[in-house]
Every structure is written in C-alpha cells, then in structure tokens.
Amino acid sequence: MNNKFNNGSVKISNDIISLIAAEACMEVEGVKAIMTPQSEKVNIQKGAQKSVIIEILDNAVNVRAHIEVDSEYNIKDVCYKVQKKIKENIGMMTGLVVINVDVVCEKISI
Image (cartoon, rainbow, N blue to C red):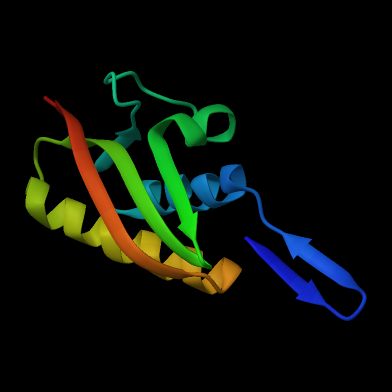
C-alpha cells in the first residue's frame, strides 16, 4: 500500500499486513495456531507472512490465512469469526478495504 501526502508518502509492507492478520487470527477463540500451507506451526513475529498470504490490488486487500482449530470448537464458526476479525483489524489499522478473506483450516488439535 502506498499513500501520497503533501510532504511524502506512507508505505505499509505486506509483512506488516500479514502480521496484523495473524494476530487477528489468534484473537479468535478456538484458534490454536497459525500454520503454513504445509501444516507447520508458525511463530507470529517471525513467520506471519508464511501463514497469511496478502495480495494488494488498487488499495484493496485479498487475504488467505492458514490456521489450526481446537477440536472442541465448530470449524465453520471459528473460520467465520477469523474472517470478520481479519477484515476488521486490517481496515482499522491501515484504512485498506479487505475484499476477500479465505481461511484454510490446515489442522485440528485433538
């Protein structure tokens, strides 16, 4: 994302947007971890961009997040809450419009 102002511009890297989305995932009850597409757990600070893929087109964001869900929770409900939380947090912190959030449940913790 690149915004121009009178005295310069502001750039928010995709890695930061990935971090915002990864932290949003972990705020949702029932999410045990963020994962890579290869079902490996990821440390949020060091590997958010491996588990949350960001695509920006004309100041609109597409997101794909990979998570592990606790088996005591309904997968569909958890994924829906993750979608809402990611959209809300990215919009609030960056001003970008999130047009699509795909959530992939890579693993269920038993």
